[in-house]
Length: 378
Ligand code: MG
Image (tube, rainbow, N blue to C red; front, side, top):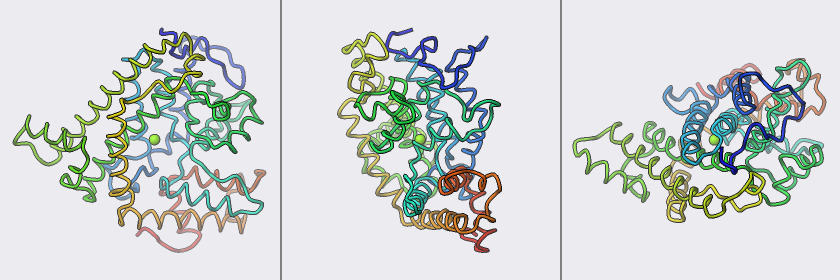
């Protein structure tokens, strides 16, 4: 065990004390709790970029999370980090996503902010923490999954200062403190952020081409894609279609992973942090080389301009936005439309947002149809 890796025997602990398990360490236990929770199963039916009903082969939040866990684990092993913790964070990192991806989050955020009295808005990283801390109902004596500090620290990937102050008031020196004092999370958490990026940059190319919204010719504008495309063609001159695309994507992932391992390994050796707290006090150590970071940024910008803002994607996400806005308005205006368990909760607007955020794409569509009689996605 490297001194800079999180050690489950020295975890900062759980919010509610629990006896150690006989056969699993604390991070394995967290991973198992996440896999068995309800929010995790809902990820199967939640949009990554393409809506669930648009095709069976597109990524969903679940398959995306599995890909992040795979990348995270194999990089973690090379770097001597804690693989179990990486896996737990990766599997939990998107639990707070609304149906319909980012469009859903924006819609819910607008609704909450417009609600009177104005609420604190909606943000999926905070919601992921809320799912594992509060919303899962699986244990007799506490709410949430009661995960270790290190797992929760990784789940709360971003946090505004305002939200950090709110969290800090409830949990002094807790998982939000680093957004106030400018420190870093564990290397395992830092790694999950980059594994997330490698995963979505790669699978969104695959899904983009599969959907017909992106072409290889267009993608050749991206330096890393063009280089791997040329390499794949040189190695396999006859190759075309899906196998060619997979070969290009495989090479792109390989380059990023190799770069990340080399550059991070070097940064860790140079900083030689003697403990996880020394990691937290250092600048970010898990990183790409500067040229690779620039290539990844370019790829991201390409995907934003050509896929996420493609008129066909925007048209679908606009409809999805309407579904969530309508649901919020109807639930807020007439409590008889809500399940009694939601009506019974304090903070009505927040309870409605939690209820909507927990929905799968298709449940949200069914609810919308039930309450408005409209079919937005025939
Ligand atoms: Mg993600």
